[in-house]
Image 1 (cartoon, rainbow, N blue to C red):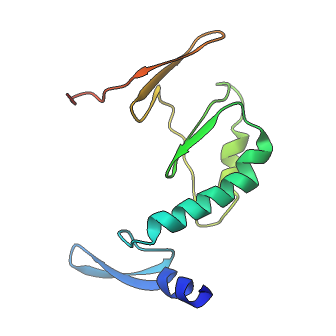
Image 2 (cartoon, rainbow, N blue to C red):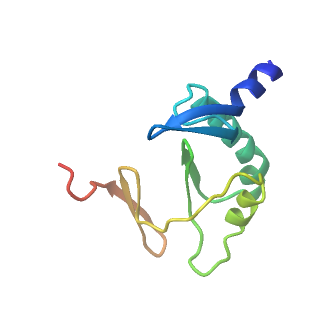
Length: 121
């Protein structure tokens, strides 16, 4: 099994805009194994990094994570996530929505509603 996984994730060749590229590490885009391996990786990362932090709120859809912290606090979670694997880099987007859910923070309330992307009917 290990040999099969290495063969599928090391040095595979793919084409993009009529050029050939070699994927050095990981699955190429479009590989049927990509979503499964990404989910396995993210589950392990959550077990090792997220769970021990006992965050008040954390959710994820595929590789999009959603969490809450105070605006002026340092982002210790982001630092930990980015030190987990040298080839993975997480970024932060500060938004008031996550997929189809809009949210608002009041003093002691977390209010959610349906979010519609501008221009969508």
